Length: 67
Image (cartoon, rainbow, N blue to C red):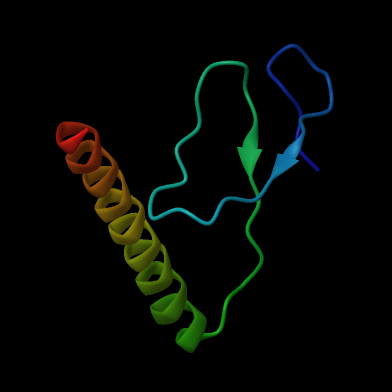
């Protein structure tokens, strides 16, 4: 349990990103422990997903050029 600088209870969040970046409106990331295999697999899955999304967006742009 963590508290904001103003003394209120901070919300717990979990992110599946390479960099758990915070921001203003204080909160603290709480990630449970991952096994060594998950530490390899999850970032690879995220990279693959981002690559597929990027490819899809390129295809949409190319399709719009053809119409």
